[in-house]
Length: 200
Image (cartoon, rainbow, N blue to C red; front, side):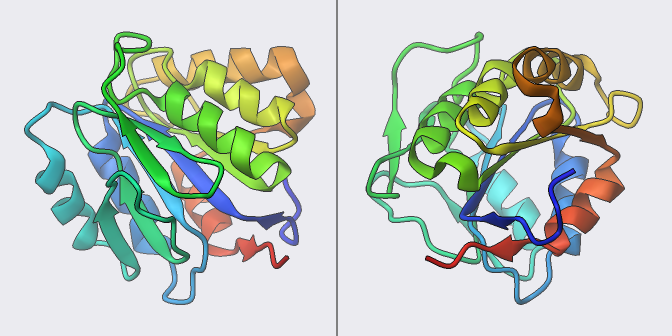
């Protein structure tokens, strides 16, 4: 488990089936003084952009925004992936959207976000995989660990759908099991609540 004094620049979250409730729980626990940006890829239909943002706004005390190209990442903000576009983090810590082919049958793809964010934030990135019914995100979470970041995965027994957590656990364990922590959703929420930002 990362020490409570471990410092981060950003949090990336990947989730699919069962995600509405899981994200609601995490948002409900974020304090008003939460300073880190959170970038979320939730597998969704192309007509659901506003729905997910509005859903999270009801439960978050910090800002929730739909991810837009060229938007620079701000502290204390939750960014939600746009349906039908891959979400990436550029070297200048601004967002980019891509209409490239689906990855793991998904667009947006968790792997695409995780790979690009880990290349930018390195050891100061926290990656989280929650409930879901595909292997999307497992390779990206392993890449985060390879770059020195940390990985949290929702316990398969605690997830609405365990396929995504199981795939993520397997992928990260093969790279560096010491960087992996498997927690219940409630435990992940508590951990996020206590995160400290990295001050350069």
